[in-house]
Length: 77
Image (cartoon, rainbow, N blue to C red; front, side):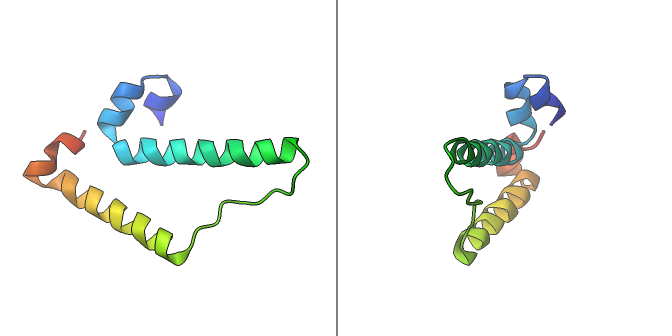
């Protein structure tokens, strides 16, 4: 987060690609919500199915494990 708030996106991606992607997803979800509220539409929050949450969990687990292996060393900070 420190690198992102300072505007050093390359270093932030280098430190943790998954965290940067999740922050980007959160910002997009917030902007969509904000746009709906500004137009007077009902505010619907981002809802995910159990399948989506499970898939995100698997991606996070694979990412975490891959960072610890020699072939995924480029993912580690």
